[in-house]
Length: 191
View (cartoon, rainbow, N blue to C red):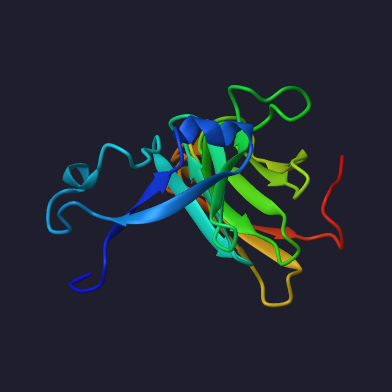
């Protein structure tokens, strides 16, 4: 990070416009690359509420903002940004995702979002916007799911419950963390 160009995202109009569909964006040079992050925010650049997971694949950057429970998609080819999921405006059956955190994508374009809190689920977000729970961890409500990764053949998925595991009293709940392995079916669940 000692060289290169530091830029910040500028969204046409207000970033809230991205709730209604794709809006154009551009990159502008940071005001002072050597200053703290807050000094690089220019009046016309976007502010995101609690950035979390990020994933790049096929000219798309997906990222989560936990402060407002949103999943965003930045299209690097079209130079647009949009909100793919917003808990505040989601309606049944797509209002199942809260505490958006870690993100991973399958080779087929489904986004897997792990919850930090919420219902301790990993939720599949399909390209058409449909949400379907893939898995849920119970009894570890004070933990978070993280580190989703796949085996090279794609038949096994690994993830952690950061504070799950033996609780020192012979039971499971809050502990030092647990690693899970999930056998992946040939197709992910569909609604």
